[in-house]
Image 1 (cartoon, rainbow, N blue to C red):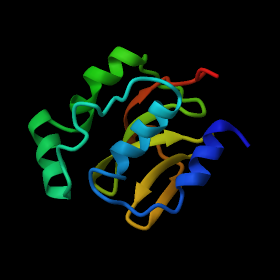
Image 2: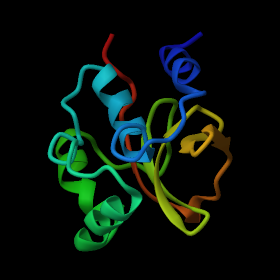
Image 3: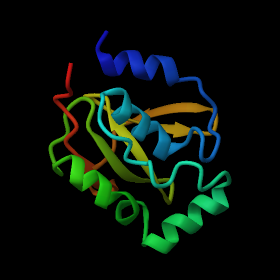
Length: 134
């Protein structure tokens, strides 16, 4: 199993908890696990409810403008994702951080992790995290 496969297997059944385990921390924790700086360092501990998270994103103009300064400093953007790359997608009228499995995008749902193929137009930004350091 790949390093990403190990990560997704470990976290697949975690239930969503805003600010602790949600679509932002899911992708950020993957990036930290790879040895990169925490792209959520400025936001961890600043929200614990969906309403507080929504206020943060609304103030920034959405999830992409909120995280782009940190993500753009760490990674290049791409339109051709590879296994382990991180993105922001519009899912069910919400913006969500997600990780590309190589075939589908993984994201956090209330009951655990979801995996879905997404049309390119639903991906708002993708960052080239791969190939990751060993």
